Image (tube, rainbow, N blue to C red; front, side):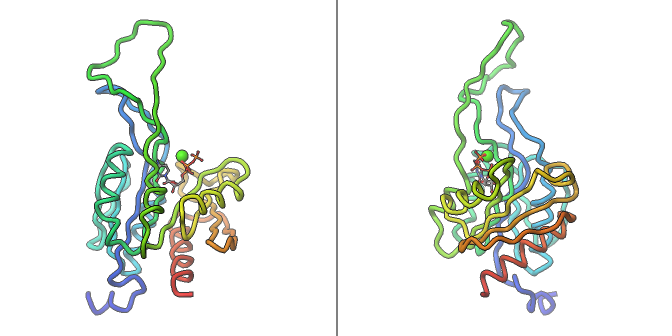
Length: 224
Ligand code: CTP
Ligand code: CA
């Protein structure tokens, strides 16, 4: 097997991928989450392994399954847990792709007992989670860092802002405009922007093919 993967472009490279949603606990039985399925991140992990890379897949709660000797799956629940796991590996990583739909806010306090129904309205105070991607941008040395952007308006402008403010090498813009693209679908439509603000628009296609497009761009940029 070694001889076969030896010639592959990611042979001996370490690839970190985040996937899925995060769940932020409100009390022992409730959480704040989102509809991310994790599919895009899992397809990225498979694509990286097919290119010979050693993959660390750090994922929030997802029904996706994966079995590949080159992929090490690390399950987490909350944004804080994802942050900690990502930082355990980042120093030795060659390529990091953060596709997780991380919660931006979490409850300030987690009730230790189930919150009982009483008043007609209930407010839960939320505080910001740590921005995992931005923290990697700050610590970046030799890593090639890729982020995602989910936008509904001013898409390109907002994506470029994230590329620059988070110190990324590439950003993948997810278009929610098109039917068939987004959280629960097996397909996706993306636009990839690099540091020189070259813009590459792709057609709607399966998330497996989107993952291949993303690695083509990463490899092209690294070896350009
Ligand atoms: N991200 C992260 N940690 C967070 C929030 C986001 O690592 N706490 C990452 C996502 O995985 C994605 C990128 O940052 O790669 C952009 O996420 P997105 O939600 O589009 O942007 P935000 O920076 O969170 O800004 P906003 O939601 O306000 O658009
Ligand atoms: Ca966000």
